[in-house]
Image 1: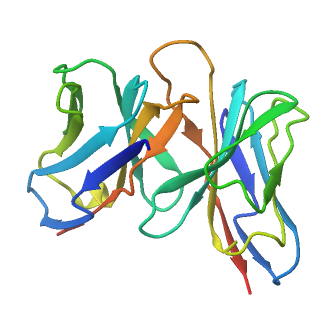
Image 2 (image 1 turned 60 degrees about the vertical axis):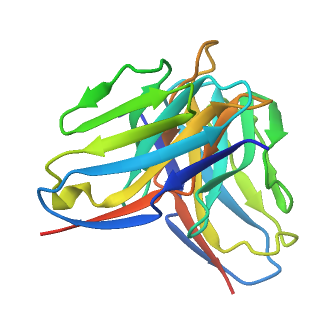
Length: 111
Length: 115
């Protein structure tokens, strides 16, 4: 069965800290891995990763994929209270080519 | 403004009633999806449609029905057969180009409470 597992489930940090969120996957016919940020409502797209070892960066956020070990990490440096959200990881693939979501990591950044 | 709209934002229903959630997109996307989100369970796929007049069951389709009569619209009906309908429902859309994958764009969601 295809699955995506995220860890930790929740995390509390202070402003300025650096955090690493983990995502491991077992997805047949794997094609890509996506990260989303969900604040109160709609998840918003962060990154899509298709190749191993190539870091994608957007401001203080970065992500990388390891297709040999079947995982991805999302790093956030110099965290701010606005980074507080649920971070969702999803693998694209499976028998019917769809997104398989993990349960998410709830990040709380305290001032 | 391009995007996905869902209505209503909050919906309250009595047990035993069917209810229809609206989802409209003006992104010219071929594919549309319905997810359900419960605390601690991430997003689970209910139904998806890759083209007008065609749709497929996702992982938790029982108790739900959909239609796709227009490219822009993909309404979801939560029927009385759905045992635990109270949840946050998210609609999404994407392109269907062949390739390594594509991002899905999400609507703001509808929070359904059934008592």
